[in-house]
Picture 1 (cartoon, rainbow, N blue to C red):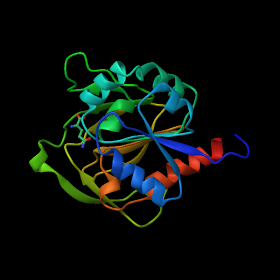
Picture 2 (cartoon, rainbow, N blue to C red):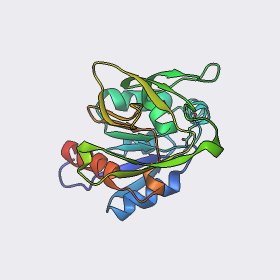
Picture 3 (cartoon, protein in one colour):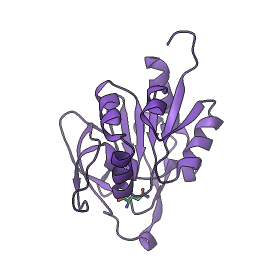
Picture 4 (cartoon, rainbow, N blue to C red):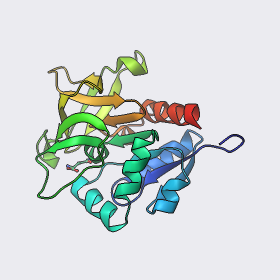
Length: 199
Ligand code: GLN
C-alpha cells in the first residue's frame, strides 16, 4: 500500500452510518461507504456501526458480504464494531433471533439487549485505561454486554458493577456503546492507528 493514503470503510447496510463517517472524516480519514465486496476490497479497515444486528446480518448475507467480511477478519483487517457492530464481531451471540449469525472474530459471548429496552438507555462515564486517564462518556442504547471473554480477547472497559463493555483482540475492537454520539473520538483514533500500522 506504499504511497497510497489509507482508506477506511463504514459498513453501510443499516444503522448510524453517517455519524461514524462524519467522525472518521473529522479525524482526516478517507471514508468509503461499504455495501459490496468490491468496496470492501478497496479499504484498509472497516467500522461496523450500531443499529440492529439481526438486520445487518440479514442484509450482509443478501448483499454477499458475510464471506468477504469473514475473510477480511481472518486476514487481519482492522475493524471497530459499536453496539450492533460488536454483536456482529462476536464469536457467539446470546439472545439472538432465530437463525441470526455473526461475522465472528472476537473470542467472546455477547448478550443482545442486555440493558433492557430503548427507554432504559443511559450514559455513563467509563474508565478505559488503554485510552488514557480521561474517562469515556459512553451512551448505551439497547446495547449488548460481553458475558464471557475467552482466552484470546482482552477487556478494555467494564462498568463499575463489572459488566464488560469493551474488548479487543488483535486488530478487532468491539464496544457496547456509541462513542460517535457523545463526541468521543479515541476509539476511532485507535482504529485508525491500527489501519496506519498495517497499510
Ligand atoms: N439491540 C441492537 C441489536 O441487537 C443493538 C442496538 C444498537 O446498536 N444501538 O443489534
